[in-house]
Image 1: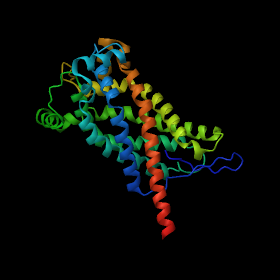
Image 2: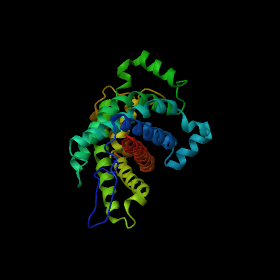
Image 3: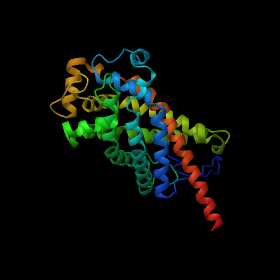
Image 4: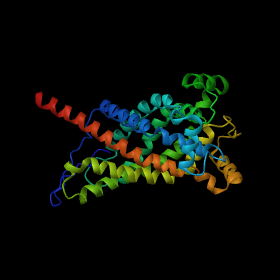
Length: 313
């Protein structure tokens, strides 16, 4: 997060300006902006990931083949089908995500000088449980719209049909899997990000103030790539549950993670659990860099406003 432990350096000469003392609503606005920018920018890669994960045959053996397949049949706009649902869900979910993270991190002492991986991991898990409750319904709509030959005309049609045919539980069939996936994802992500950022600040020869953007981008790439690959099997399970019964996708009698994993292994082998890991890594590495740098910039903006208000008062 933002210069999570304001390090004033004596011997090392490292200085980092903390932005963790913002108001709660400022964390929410900064998170909302960061999440929206991240997901909108990376949406085409997310579409490819969904296509590759959802069927045993996928839509091509590689990311390049999947891309050519979508563009050839549906045109470039096919990569953006469902982006309206993402627009509705990403902002509110990330507002909850980052504000809960910041509050929990502060309560657990994660803003104090030094490295606090436990505080960062626990705060990250709490944040994902809260934000997933907000985002999962729109994620279901998004992924169903992303499917090839999706039967839904748009976001409103998809929402109304799911509610009519499956009820409210249709929007939350994958919630348990999503939380089980995102809890370790977020723990790995936040811990890696904070550790990488701190390490980069310590070796930065020119001072953190001049290289803050590079630090955030580099740490974000490392955190996103590692967390994305590690949690791919659970992401496959989540995608299958969210898209079950649509466009020829398998329907499951149980939303149990174990039963879905067993079915995938039985039909596709263990390789089926890693389907789409490349586009997932290609999504999360730059997405994390975009999200963190945007979030940090928004926090710095709010901090400047707060500082000016303090001076004027």
